[in-house]
Image (cartoon, rainbow, N blue to C red; front, side):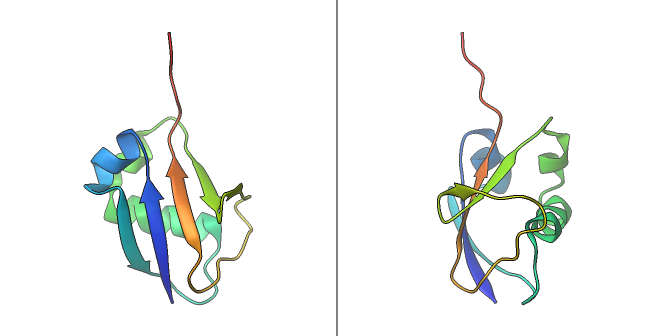
Length: 80
């Protein structure tokens, strides 16, 4: 199935785009998506942490993705 992934901040730099389409297995969980992303973009693994939101809601690793879901990669934020 195809999902849309939006990335922000350093995640967009790592992925080379703020928006991309990615084909994932039909039974893909958030945890599996993180593994796929780490294989495709190894520098993501170097981030201390990042969150995944699906359709504007933060989801746990066990959450199963559906066709046409909009996924966001939210990197840690810093401020001063």
